[in-house]
Every structure is written in structure tokens, then in C-alpha cells.
Length: 242
Image (cartoon, rainbow, N blue to C red):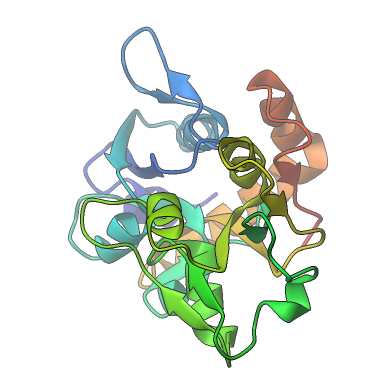
């Protein structure tokens, strides 16, 4: 770790870590002091400890809002899914954790496999600017993506408009499927959301430190221990070495 890395990642003397509050696997609750708690905040705490600086957690309602704030001097590192669109402005580490993304289909749907979703006439509800939503933006060729209207969630839009499929993270879909009798979560995955740590492109020394830290955290078992600590085993997986 170089002095330059500390200067880049904590220019105010405090590491300001952007936290996506919209991912219930990575943020599972609050500390007694009211700060976000979970795998993602604990990763930020470990990074601040290694840097030897205090930590300030900066919560965002969604990953899109967190990503948009890069360069606005409100966070120094951001813990969100690494996607090519975001990587245009954010320098990401390799993934430290992974989550499967798949589809939920309603009762009586003729769709049986993930491959059958991307067909003409199929309408897919998906949260705008989520990591898996960005993946679908790049890869869906024939189906139509339906982003929720203001003030309504993608699941509510899926139900209200009787859409053909609802895209999401498998752990969340498993909870949602019980709300719709006869609905099914499709086997397999259309993508694996790569949860990573990012910083501004200009922070070259800081980015190098973060890349090394994440690889060390995976190899040492830190990630696996955080997943166990916050009771998200089987829903969140430690990513393999880069």
C-alpha cells in the first residue's frame, strides 16, 4: 500500500464508501448506531481499517444513483455490481461476490427455459439501471424490456400489466414467487451479477490497492466469513480468484 493510494482513496482523511441500499443480500440491516450493516458495509469497514483511516458510509437507494454520483465528490469507493456501462467512469476490482439473475414467470406461462424468454412478443419487467437490467439492455434482442413507472416497483409492474416475465436476482425471486400462486422461477441464470469495489478512473494507485485487497479478501476467507456472519449463504457466493 502506497501513500498515494491513501491520498486518492481518502482525500478528506476519511474513506467515504458508497453503499447500495437496494440489495438486501449485501445490506441486511442496521448497526446499533444506525449505519448500514451487511457484507458490503463490512467490506468497506475492512478497507478503511487496512488504509488506517476512519470510515463514512454513504447510502444510496439504488445502484444507478450510486454509479451516477461518481465524480461528484460524495464517495471515494463504491460497492456495486460491475457492469460495462458503469466501468466507463468507474475503475472496478474483480468481483468479490456473485449473485445469480434469472426470471419469474406467471402461472400458466408457456415459457419453460431462459432461452425462451428472448422472443418477439415477450415483455420482461426489470428494474432500470440494476446490474442485471444493464446486462439485459445489452443482450436482449427480441423481447421487450419494461422498466417500472415512477413510484412503482418492477414486480408490481409485472403483476399489474400481466407481463410475461420478471427479471431479478434469484434470492429475491424465490421470495416473490410465493406471492403469485402457480408462478415459477426458471432454472439456470441469464447472468451472474458481479459485486465489486470501484473508484474513480483517475485513482490509479487507489484502484491497484483495491484490486489487491479484494483478491486477498477472497483468498483469506474474509468474504466467505462475512457471508456466513450475515446469514446469506446459498444466496450470495464468494467470487473465484481473478
